[in-house]
Length: 125
Image (cartoon, rainbow, N blue to C red; front, side):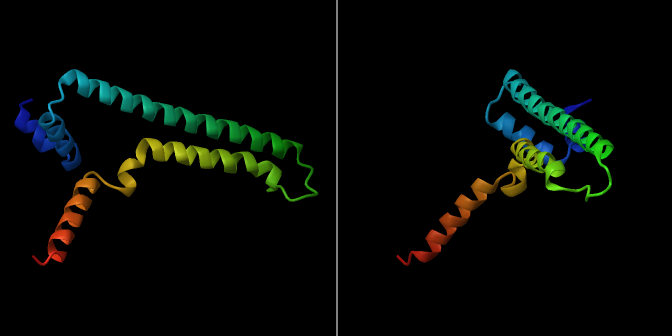
């Protein structure tokens, strides 16, 4: 597949990332290392999510089997593990996938340019 064909089939985000890597002088080994680390982080999150689901399913099933029916099933004692572990899982997910959610790809550059334009317009020399 020719390089131009790769650009056509590539999404805008992936194309920008590839061009940035090429412009910054990353060699293929460095790009491989960055991609490898990213894949390891994603895999770690998926394993964490799988363990979360399995352990909490086991807790809920065993609690349901011990439940006698005279009280409300959804009590704090049965849900606190899922809640607090879920908060930790969400934080883990944000650390892996979330850097683009809040700030985007070029947020820093856009913000710097915005502040420079604002400073330029405020000076009345």
